[in-house]
Image: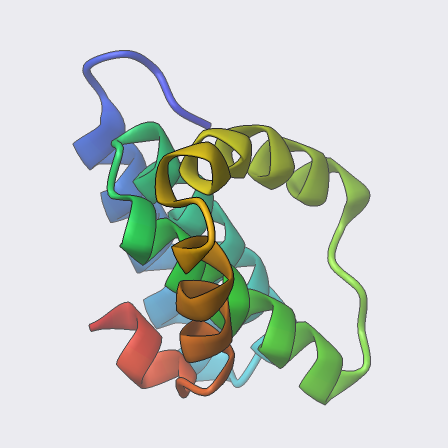
Length: 108
């Protein structure tokens, strides 16, 4: 997912995936791409963005009634652990904020 020095490339890939998934109406892949963006934001030390994107991804998965892929969840949780440590109690507030965002707003 993340290769040192290639975070921008990974982010572009997730954004491209989002565009394609939205064009064909695949909400599951939109949610997975948001999870990927969340992990990448955490790896790039953009802690609030990481938490918000994680919240948006989780909310969309719940909304469509489809759990995330376990492999994506495992990667995301490892990446988010540092965000949780860095943000402390604010992590949950950012996560809740993300749960209220539409996919479009989360992407912005």
